[in-house]
Amino acid sequence: MRPADLQAVADVELASYQFPWNIGIFRDCLLAGYQSLVLEIGG
Image 1 (spheres, rainbow, N blue to C red):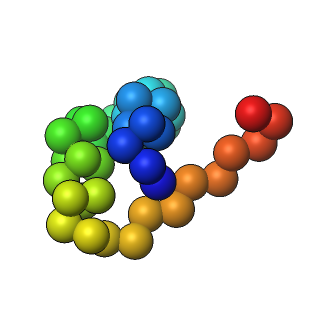
Image 2 (image 1 turned 30 degrees about the vertical axis):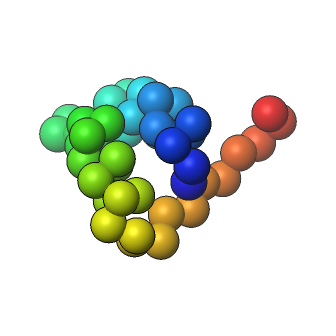
């Protein structure tokens, strides 16, 4: 996952979970160096 992916990832999270992570949590994970993978289909 790259910083440019954050909004799209947060949008999917919001649509998928009752208690979703917010964009800040994903950003913090990137800044901490956690491995974050994104599967992109057709785009």
